[in-house]
Amino acid sequence: SQQGEEDPQALSIQEGENATMNCSYKTSINNLQWYRQNSGRGLVHLILIRSNEREKHSGRLRVTLDTSKKSSSLLITASRAADTASYFCATEETSGSRLTFGEGTQLTVNP
Amino acid sequence: NAGVTQTPKFQVLKTGQSMTLQCAQDMNHNSMYWYRQDPGMGLRLIYYSASEGTTDKGEVPNGYNVSRLNKREFSLRLESAAPSQTSVYFCASMPSPSSYEQYFGPGTRLTVT
Image: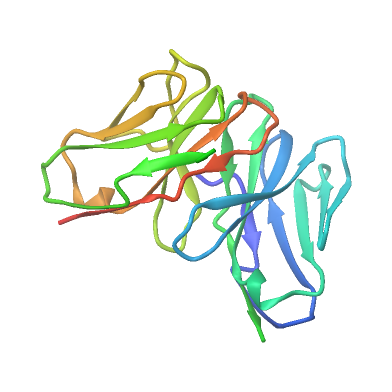
């Protein structure tokens, strides 16, 4: 079964707006990662946040992690049409060695 | 560096046929993974190899076998393909088994009729 559950399943916004995606998980983790997948392509790593971190930034991306609520959010600021893609969270459980992926959020940024 | 490469890109099989999906990475990574992705879903782990010489089952291993041929190569074999194995298959690698990002190949789109 999937460890991560993402919300919303689909999100449509206008260029320039911010996009927020949420991920909830069930077990203790070492880290949580976000990946992007453009249509018909492989996944590309965006950002990793460790269990002892609460917030991390990378360019227009901001990730938060709340281990007490077992949840994370990904914020993309000033979105662009090129941000249109599916976004997946993935958790590495404390047992290590493997990632478990959520079902993803399909983001559409309209020009 | 080519990163993670997968062959073939597309394949159509008839039920009961066998085939091997190939994956290679040139980043000297220790860990390698095989996932399947079904329409509208996330990735599910089939098998993984935390290091050369080891392989372990993931979430959905039934109907598949793997071989970690050497540090670079990790192959996935379907012995008797079934329509339920129609999917997109992704290979990934990671520097070591913990706390790093995974690097993905472009995928193999497999259809079983």
